[in-house]
Image (cartoon, rainbow, N blue to C red; front, side):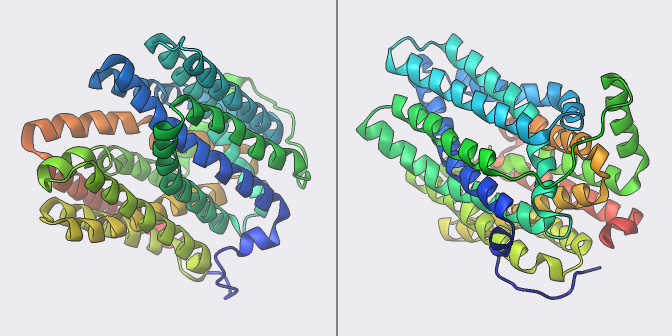
Length: 408
């Protein structure tokens, strides 16, 4: 049931929870650096190789470890001190960024270095994401969890708006290496915040089963808990058939609307602005609505926006539609994340979040490849429409077959 009415200040959780305020502030600063590095890495790969395939390969190797390592990482997140684990992964992210800065600054950078360091980043992400997501409950409690996740999404999308612009300015003024260097420095902010967090929960109980049995235990829980199973499967469908619209944006901008790089940037900015508005709205009003029904409203709205995008013929219409798509996407993602954590017991939360990371992050390259191949065969507009229909069709199926989910 919806919670009792309370303040609609979307930043209330930051005011109330000191630990989350420290965590969020440091992470948001660091995410600006992460987006700067992402832009610079793709640009550097293109300059070194002049190969679109290698640009895609460097991006893909950063996601592949998430597909392979997420489930074992979830077991780890349920067995060790999550705060210490996150401090370790964030410190190693800083080392990775420093190495990227050094090889680029000294002129020793090669495609081999880029592939190796992108793989390192993917391994760290596979370990970091389940632990970081599971720790949010420890920072704010169950009642404020969805609000906190929505604010996390706000920080991520603010960084997505700011980071690429800063990267472009730095590349033009100082060179690519400084994007990596500033990203390395940005990890100091998140580490300071993590070290200042005061322990508020009891240590995790010692494990009673082997790591393999622990992983199987988590998978059995997901399989046997109907609402969790539905949410995870729905996320997989959304990741493979919905989110790849972002992958198609360059081709859509150039071939569908006749835009240049500036117009492409406007389209991406529209997604980011819509996402920020959606995250802040969820943080302000999410506790006053039935979350399961809001989740389905977001899914159907997202699918409708993709269909509208497929037939949009002007930049103005596309921007308006992408604002809606960005808003609905973030509301869906934050609600699914929050519902999974709220439903799951504390002892299994890391493993549930590792499965969520696997389908949400690890499967996204599969969706991107599928969308690219389909668009090459039948066109971008048709691919967008097909993805929209699949997302809407599966949402309609779960809405009618699993009413418990919509009543969460």
